Image 1 (cartoon, one colour):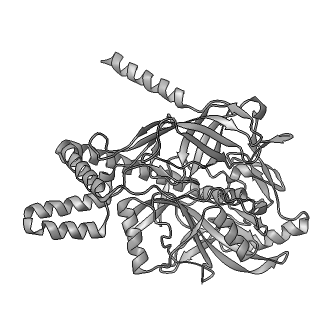
Image 2 (cartoon, rainbow, N blue to C red):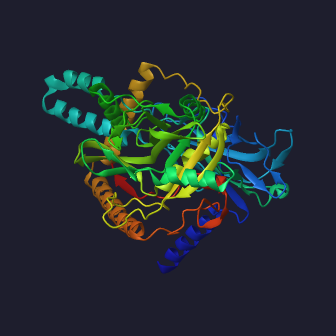
Image 3 (cartoon, one colour):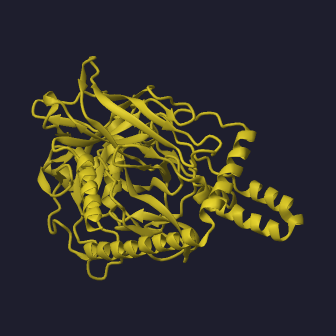
Length: 519
């Protein structure tokens, strides 16, 4: 027995070492150019994505427009649900293609998909969600049990449930523009690449002093309209006209948010229980200096639980004749039910610097940015007598983004259309098959006990992670007492110099298990 245990441990270690990052590999962002789907993709089909992370080295850089190319290796669709209840898709990226036509063979592995409901395993395979695990299906099951008790209620209950919530689509589908995170072992001509540095705003000490004065005048937090408590940290400043701001975010794939209403609220609830996206989902009204936001923007993929979102407020004053805008950006990474305020609410990534850098990365890629300057706030986030939001932590820097006219933004990341839905008959047969299969497999004491244990372990791990995160948030800033513009290395681990900001800060990686705060 002991030998079997040691053998299993050895196999686990070998598997983990096989999936570990190669010593010379780099993690980059890429935008999908070829739509992929378990509905239509076939093994052997070509797939292409454009590298969006700017990479440089001394005297050279990765050419703009470089793509990674590969093929669909394996497709497993749900179909009618007779064989599989979840979908999977595996892509084998193997070629680095330069704009001049040169190709390099390179080990490339998919390690993440931004804001996706699917998970990625160690081999880079994509695994879809289980439709019968959603709130919508659990709700329909409860109605079905009521129908068994009162058979005369079966038809009206089924019609009511069908009208309220739709059975989720379990297939995998990504349109053009989906954001991939790749791990690439670059060939010899591009070894040593690092995120490019970006120019800072202005060129004189006075310009930087003026910018620092604008940052010093920003409130630290936006506040809820209904509760007098800090909500989202102000961590971005934009300099430019309103049309430039609109054009830049549109080119980056961001969309607006519907006004708060009963209709939009119900639409958001449907998106939550059906585990799908809501492109213009409403956002809570937050105030900055007592004023509502002038713009509310968001970016999601295929689930409402995960999205990038921010609010933008126009500030008094100008810089070099351009308007000044303050923004608070956070990433939603889950949903939960809250008693105060009552209803469904989002959980956010507590390291808000990740979202700040993600926004900068998106805007830089559009070509609508002239400069990015990181300026530190004059005081610690949790200074004496200062209100703060529990758990949230930051390096206390504000990214000041100077926009250009944005007349010719990069638009090759615009999302495409989705595949047509299966017929009503196919959807109904799939629902019946998956529901019956789920009932046979999981409606028993053994499964429910194991599931309860799993949820308990997840809850305890979440509590411990929040406790550790709050301890980290209570520590003083990493670089106190210094408000000069600085840059960070690719991991954001410390100062590297003055006067430049590293594009590596803007990569916005969010692949770790996130610590969350309800909002």
